[in-house]
Image (cartoon, rainbow, N blue to C red; front, side, top):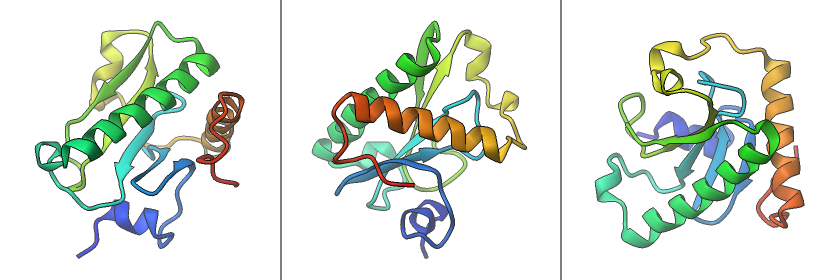
Length: 142
């Protein structure tokens, strides 16, 4: 049975994509810790990150770093957080988000009802930063 992330990747469920390549995608979290909170997700359904092929794991980390640098350029946070915890969906994914404090790592603080308009603005800001970084090949059109 397909995970919710596979359904998003396949277009069965809408997502605000900022990255697409042959191995992974990145889209905004529907329950963000901060503006721009992005999930980097392999196309392949792998439940636990320990089970990722090492080359795929390295690719996901590279894409996470590229997304993080774009977030840093857009929001200028103290840090860009990254986390793999894997409890919500049985499909490996890396959380990447602009953060200014350790308290912003607590998933009890997610925005359960983010503004759709603000989410789309955040996605577009990340896309524009990625385009400015020369990543046009991977930045999806709206």
